[in-house]
Image 1: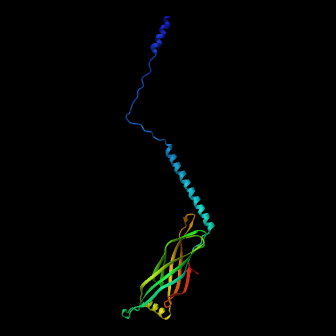
Image 2: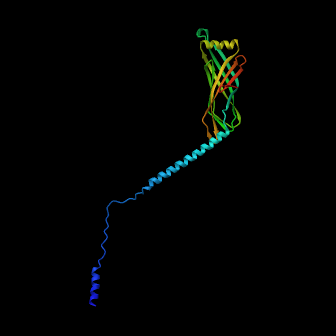
Image 3: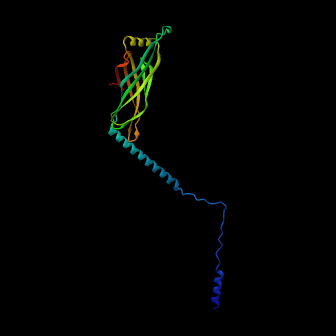
Amino acid sequence: MTSTTGTRRQHHHNHQPPPPHHYYFSGTPSYYSPSSSSPSLIKGCCCCLFLLFSLIALLVLAVILAVVLAVKPKKPQFDLQEVAVQNLAIFPSPPAAGDGGATVSLSVRLIFAAANPNKVGIKYGESRFTVMYRGIPLGRGSVPGFYQPAKSVKVVTTTVAVDRVSLMQADGVDLVKDASLYDKVELRVLGDVSAKIRIIGFDSPAVQVSVDCAIVISPRKQSLTYKQCGFDGLSV
């Protein structure tokens, strides 16, 4: 009996309470730091987006190329159809001037026909034309930009007005001689037309269409007597 009681006391004395837990506060707050895999994940997403956009761009280009090959676009035709002479007056310089020149006043209405032989529309930029006499610019006219539907012909006009432009010496003498003796004044109309072919909402790079026309005007009749035009170097 005594031994049993002693044993119980011995176990009671040997049982020690658990040591107290010590908590330390460093005074510096801790922050959450992302794992090292986050930059790699962002980089992978960027690469996927880049590849996706590149694929979409390639598909769009492929569709446009297929349409272009199917349409087979051609250059538009821009031809001078008619020249309406509104006024032509030539004034020799007075003898006191002693230069043997002349002045010319001119007003002509140029009527162009723009033909679109393509299956798609054409967008024209502003076109400028110059009327010249023996390489000397007399006046300029312009045609505003416009859109032309497929397989159509559009008539556009511009007026070139020349107000007493002086021609010196030989050019003035020749102009007076041609007008008074031969009843003709030879002029040249030059111009460049910028055109873009529009395919499913996209414009192609601009192509240039050149206009080069030789015209002869009768001062007495105030009318056109001759016209020959070149279209991109080809006679039409």
